[in-house]
Image (tube, rainbow, N blue to C red; front, side, top):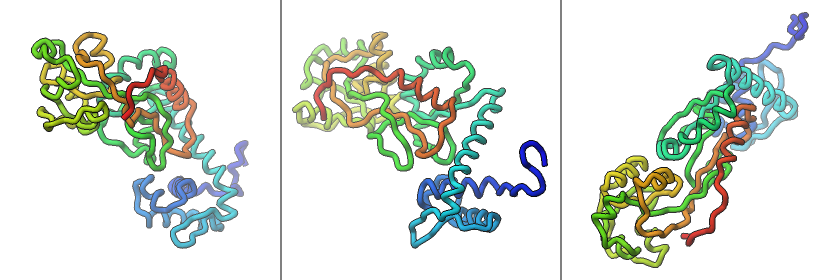
Length: 308
């Protein structure tokens, strides 16, 4: 036997696919949820666990109908499996990308280009030993299957199987270019805005925004509708009309003067930006350092505008 105890009498280490399936079912309490998380079929999950139980000579899970609970052997084994998988993830992270730990971040184009990118240099100065891989996508990728380690998402903070920590509260404001404001000198009051070209996006409703401030829109908004917020902001900068946007996404444009807020009304959104990670999955030191850094960017509470 060597110094690590890997002699002929040492227990055989089962395939990692079976250990991952067992840990996922135990954490989710469901074969179907584990299948979704691992991007395999439910029967494949069941087969992997059956192989694992056969190899170990012990039942790990108790199945009654659709419910799943841990058998005594499963309760004893689970902490070791979690620790082992966590150590393996940490080890892989340490040798990836020239030996530096790598954090995979997912977020939408608007928050990436209009908020995160201006702040990233501060993270790299503080943590030069951590590499960051940024996946910019409008869709919510599957964090539980390992497509990313962490995400910044816009919503109300409830995603099944995920932990969410509030990062940025959002207010909805109406903006346009200085040239558009100059070309429409009558644009001074909230009621005047209904006559403007109102650019649209599905995350914010002009009708609801006006209604929250006691103004009933008499006509439907006339203007282009965009599927991507970044294009909406660019269209407003190009004097195509007024855009209803989250304030955090146009901080730089308002500071630089490429966008203005002709009517200073603001509405608290039901949504916020959240830091999102898979529930129950141990965080590597590098991932925790990145999350801690993000939380240092959390803005100080402001006097609340009118809620909707």
